[in-house]
Length: 261
Image (cartoon, rainbow, N blue to C red; front, top):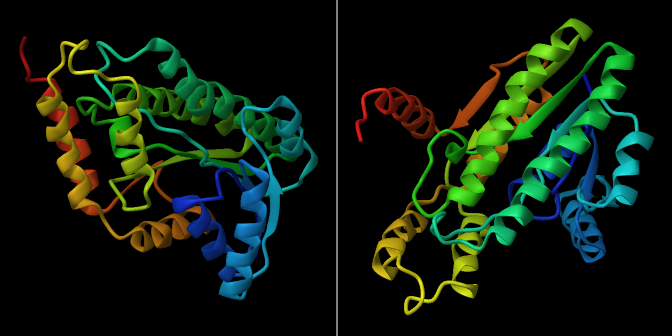
């Protein structure tokens, strides 16, 4: 059955592909993008794919833009918008961490609260938070982004428990590393402030983590999985993809109980 799906952060990457993929399945997609120029580019991409999208400009950190989440009617709300920041957590300027949290945690929660109220009034609806493999697996030099996704995991678990009595579903999707350009840009951000002459963290240590950029997956596979989960009536609370990502997340949680300091 066709659904109306509201997705934030649809201007690029997995969000963009998922919005188009859902439209291909016959759903009415309200695709929110951060900046006005992305409205045109996403509409053009939808036309090229032979689908119709309702594309709107919505900066998730803007109170004025957030009003649109209240004005629309929809069956599923997908909190996908996020930003990234790399660098050693012991040295990263905290104002940069605050900026990550403002988008990934505080604004995401504000948006989800608006959707939650609408769904509670309707006694039905589904909220999906885009988390990450690093929402469970805390990788070195990705602490700002990883910790913001750890917060999303806690918000999603709590919201699920609180909204069940109202018939509202809550879930997470946890992608592994996919080659959309997001991860590359996140790693690049640290070079705006890191100075190997001033910072005690060795440049060589930081660069070791960047090898994962050579092991990223085809985003089309993740897009297909996101479409599958978002449109489904029932599915797991947490969807990690691909299978290697799920296995890594489970093993990491187990290993932490055995680690010593």
